[in-house]
Length: 417
Ligand SMILES: Cc1ncc(COP(=O)(O)O)c(C=O)c1O
Ligand SMILES: [Zn+2]
Image (spheres, rainbow, N blue to C red):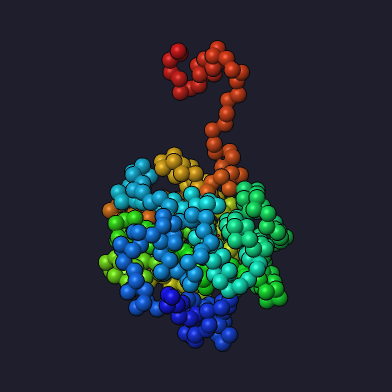
């Protein structure tokens, strides 16, 4: 019989302990709750070797994740590629640039990480219904994992989401509730629904467990770099959770002696039409002022980010940077990544690459800094964003004469054939 890994939940503000159930805020100060582990016990069990012997999914880090069961809900999420992005690096003057491509997860975003863990914990806690408030990608992931785990599934989304995300969720047959409003309004409604219905809302009452899934991006990058932390991470921000957990993942590996101590700068990227965290970072403010989002990057359109302050604090503490980009720069970022590294990312990836380009141009990233750009979602879900930027098919009959004609017309063809 395994000893229990999860010691308790604890308030991030006043440190009051709570039983590890389906709760997410402190009853005394309304601070968010976080999972507390028995690190001594984990340290006795975990080594580089034990991790390397694990499955090629994020469950190779089972010992560091907030579930007790080995009967996990998985569709082979995580363990996504990281590579030295030489073409993009050459374009931007960065010799040690890496791309972490999380857009190749089972439902094509990093949300499969958080939802795999949330679904496993949901089953452990005995729920029969799983739900979420989503900016799109989470809806797809909750749809898939809810189906596989045979749970009743409800997803709540803003009504104006991209078609690729609505279809990408709908294929799994969840109940989709589209709200006439923005994500912050969806989220507020879901807090009320979670209060009245005994459901597992992955990013409401299951949030302390769910959020831990993003740590695995930090773990994987360190392992894939040969058991060392990068010098610099550039992370897209919506709620801010992903950024805080990539940092936490690296810190846990250091604490467990799996990688040498290292100061990694953690930087955040947002769209100019929704950049409350980057604004707070620029102003060195302890308040993240809510905004009304107006951006092409709908997956990042959270105007009142739950973990915004914590994300800002980590950017500040680690010497990280903040950057924001216009819609045009987002689309240029998507194109640049496609042309240089062959990756078709969604608008959130455009925010990351657009911001990376600006930071590199301003000299704020050293050329030799081992920098990881996190690509968290897939371009096939946000095709609308690039429709007037892509090559259009030239339609002809199946005739070599017609092909010769159009070939000769192409400005690229200097000589006739
Ligand atoms: C593709 C993508 N990247 C990044 C994020 C940001 O994650 P977080 O809300 O944890 O900051 C989201 C959030 O929905 C997303 O869909
Ligand atoms: Zn508290």
